[in-house]
Length: 259
Image 1 (cartoon, rainbow, N blue to C red):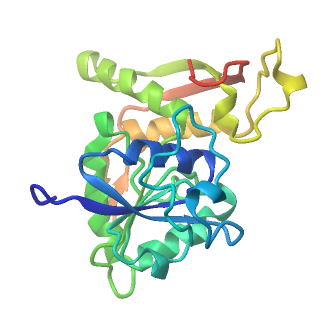
Image 2: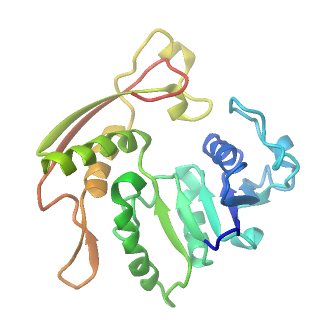
Image 3: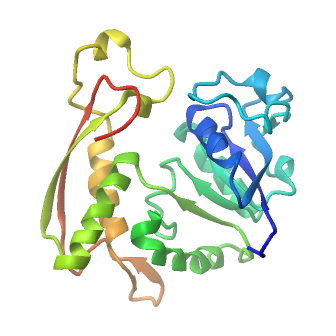
């Protein structure tokens, strides 16, 4: 980023829970300017304050209240260099791909591209070196992309786990195995979340797909980037020092915050 120049950014899925959190974080960011907000056809054409059912603890930021919501199409985000995707996984895949092909830098919270062998799964404190995969990702398109790419974040609980694991490996060497137990707040289930009669005074000892995601994502994040037999870069999935991960994930009656 050029010194003193702010970057125009957009948010996909701006009316959802994740999109709202993106907006809350970006509205006063020193480097970014919220330039475009995208949501479903039902919300498109309305001022953001009328289109959204706001669920955050802070008020809707003044800078977006009167911004007209657009459809999630690349042509509606002209002027943006980066888009942050808070889209639901049911629709995120093809929309994010369309934005990548249109030469946008896409940072996604959705799970759709996390297993892509050319998409970095980034926790900045742990594996910023995985950004080196982006040139290869661009080169696989025909014609090769100049600016577009997709980067994803990890599952919320995976992010909290890999930071101390990486510190332990740095201090003491490779870890052979770890067992993880999570207590995850109901906000992680999105809106409207878990039915009240299921969660009040209760712990639900299963979150569909969560344990598999934690076990697999941990290996991709903590592993390195190496060269495959065909000369292309690959994520080695911690293969050089095999790591066994076992996760057990629980939903607990807490509004926000995972343990």
